[in-house]
Length: 246
Image (cartoon, rainbow, N blue to C red; front, side, top):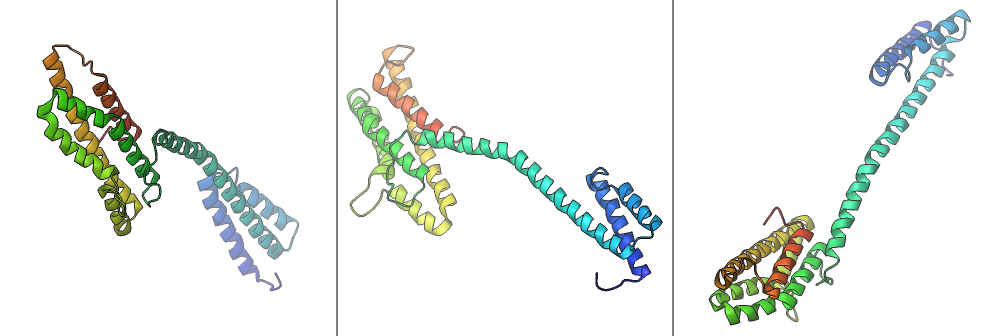
């Protein structure tokens, strides 16, 4: 304000202010950016023969203050809108993680994701508690299915059987893809293989069920080991969100 502006220069500023009120009132509403009130103040300044340069600079500061207040209002509105959505996402993630965490966590010393660690734990628990029992059933009553059972056992072991110096094959593949592609793609490729394993197991169990029902003449399967095995696989499929992939 040290430099004295000419009357023409002051009029240029007033004209720009007038134009800005036009634009902002159209976009954000007359109630917040009132051109009518601006004109009223301008006419009052002319009537009272005020220093128009001081008036113009005061109006510039006032308009900037309005813009700042508008920005704060918009940010508050954005936060209010996003907060419930963010909470829903956080709750959904927590619910998913709760489902994983009911299984044992395997290979937590590796760099694979927690999801992959819990998946390996789920498969390991399935293998030791149910799949080996299924092997006894196959050898006793369904010897013709032993070849498929052994083939599936080999695939399962690729997720859980570590040696002294190496992780299981699928975990090693994960770590290779992690270095090459990053964690998101490595995790996706690993879980894709996991989903494929569950699909094959489910298909095998369906085949076994149909065979046992046919041979027994009963409409429902009665073998508790088979029923528990089917239930466990269905639970893993649900908990790791594989339902759409299988």
